[in-house]
Length: 176
Image: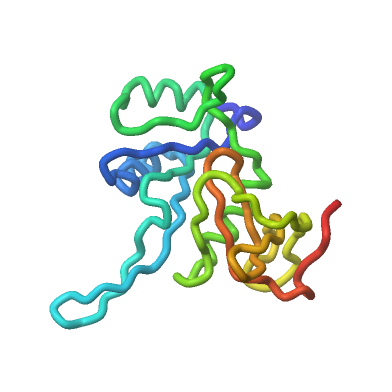
């Protein structure tokens, strides 16, 4: 694959096969990402913690648009790719948005990340910020009021929005 044309793309995976598809793609050398979070449950009287996808049907992969279309053609019923509605081509994800999303969700300890759907709800407008320290260093997003708390909200346009608990002001830098 030409490194210049390799981008991140999002897939909506059917039949709870997100992790199986991720393994198949990784076997082919494709970089993937699934946001995971710990889930506790009781098995035979013992509390067990296991990692589950934060968003059950969402898988990200890094490849070329042509490779993705060919793979989709060969595996038609397993998933859909998020597409540009005007061109019907796979919609690439902005590198900065994807990096921020990975920083927030990879650092999740089960209580911090909140899935908000696929678009930012109409909260009070906040400032665009970059996290300069701590667990989420490097992430970029917006400070939004979600219910009664201020949170850092990161969006991959048209795909997913997540929010994390408020970041201390000393770790935030305003971006114009």
